[in-house]
Length: 486
Ligand code: FAD
Ligand code: SF4
Image (cartoon, rainbow, N blue to C red; front, side, top):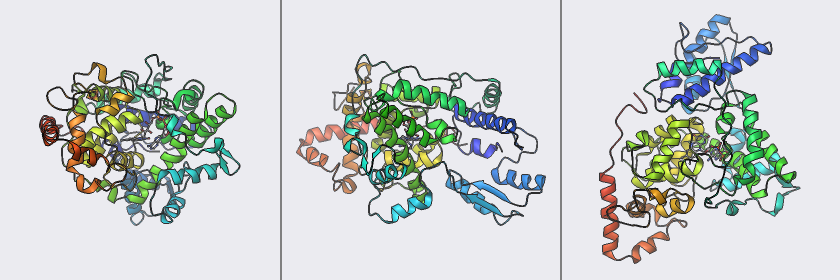
């Protein structure tokens, strides 16, 4: 096992993300040793550490006189290419094995994709339900429906009271990593004051137990809700553990299904949770490998604006944005709707360059690896792939955020004000986005109808929207260099 400098700095990951990964690796190495395995572990600051996967593999081959190298396929295109590049120079054969922590192998995904004109998640998800047997009643979906999403869009009630998320206090191993990260990566984004992610499979199992018992029943209903200062609501917070490989995704789904069969959680919650994992997560991973390397450069809407500074500092009067950045800085996490409809939506309608947004998302979230971050950001949030993944851009005005959150009441901006001084910035930017991209979006059956509304507006109202959008865009301070990459 090897900790290599290249992987900690090729983008300047959130400090909590580095601690999470290195601490989990060190705990896993100790568990393997306790179980009788021999582990050759290269720590980040060990003398002679070459700082790269390829360098450390070569050194390990020499050290052990290895006759063969076997690695599991990595989660990033960049790493796969460097491993493939090592095949020639390495003195022994190198075999890249499939990652069996997914339900759908990449070959099966490619076969599915080849047989389709459009690659919609919903069709793929049904195949995964049949394949796993999860929530199936014979050949039919449990309850007669594949998808209960329409029950999962409640606004947050005033008295909504999610149980506190389980947090795991750093032990000695994590403490040592925290000390090293604070010293070595002092200029990286994020705080370590609240670090509490599971770093072992036992802790991850404990977090899963707590989710199934305490949060799953309301997971569906409030899946899209946002509440100021209440960062996770009824979400599972399991993505860091599943992506690290310390929690099995199918086991999470089976536990949720059992809760339904025991009458402890309703179908809309359980189906919604299972869809996120065997539907969205698997589909996103397949799409990453199918669309790379083009996806990393995609920019269908020709967006060129630099990322605004407030994505790093949180220094903005937009209460929704400031709260999402705060949560991101404190815990390296924000939930799905915060990522999609606040942080992603603003970048989309302001026309921020996809590669700058992608860097940000890759840096700031503890669950971010390129296979899962890039399709979610480029294709889902920014529509940079021209709709290969998402049937429409997730562009929204302040109305959506107001409906799904309690952010707007105490905001310095007025969500009901459409234009001019004090108007919610999402309002004029939404129309400006549609006007800027009319050629590409007018024929889209899911968003195209908005143009009829625009065309019915009086010219002075249209102009007021465009003027207000220009004022918002002119006022955006670009992020200074060095936050994401040196
Ligand atoms: P829950 O809401 O409890 O969902 C349960 C599980 O479903 C998650 O743990 C995760 O494993 C899976 N899941 C749900 N939605 C997705 C999805 N769209 N793609 C893949 N898996 C999903 N997820 C990441 O794991 N890493 C990322 O870097 C990442 N970046 C994102 C960027 C954007 C712009 C958007 C819109 C979404 C992103 N997601 C990412 C997906 C999703 O937001 C997170 O998986 C989720 O917020 C994790 O919190 P949770 O475990 O509480 O999830
Ligand atoms: Fe966000 Fe606009 Fe609501 Fe303020 S008014 S919280 S900027 S959506």
